[in-house]
View 1: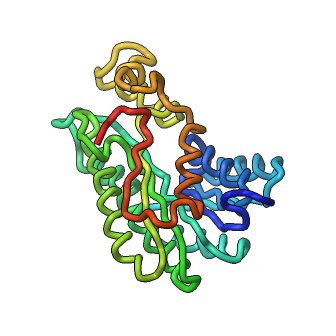
View 2: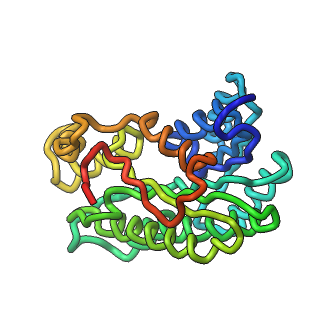
Length: 262
């Protein structure tokens, strides 16, 4: 099958819904053998079945908590056993649970940081271990506008995404000698289940008064005039996964419709 990532083995974490699902479908449509990895095994299997209904290579459904190294390692080993190799790994899984700054608890901090930051570190390490013997690879992390500026009710989430940017740069330096690049892309407001939950959570802490207000308020400054749909991020993801980006590493690509200009 002809395509920008034809024949490549690509794993996407958090691929059971939202952006991860869209990226998985986009990679499959371009000829990749996709590992659909999610903490929700049923969701991963559902997306793998969607791919099976396309004119695309069969996908591999994988289940793992990205903050648990043994689970990630086992999932990647299972993928390599079926696909033959790991060429590209997307550290996309993440979540947010907003709290006012003075209300942030240790549990809130650790739960977000464990998935969004530690999970990216583990993903980078375990993917790299399986790429080094091949002499090349690409690791792509999902950052955020929250990795460029702090938001009052998102302190742990912002800290986790600043950490993603730092890990992207550190990995780019550490893995360059192995011909492995590490990049990231930073979405803004994306209409996904994560934002649906976020909208409800922000109402719950009094930051908004009605359904949809939080998204509308955050999206008001988007130069492109609307929140993103998951499919809006697929082109950037494909660029970073393909040979077109071979000379790029250590960079965070803003893909936010013009919310944060840096």
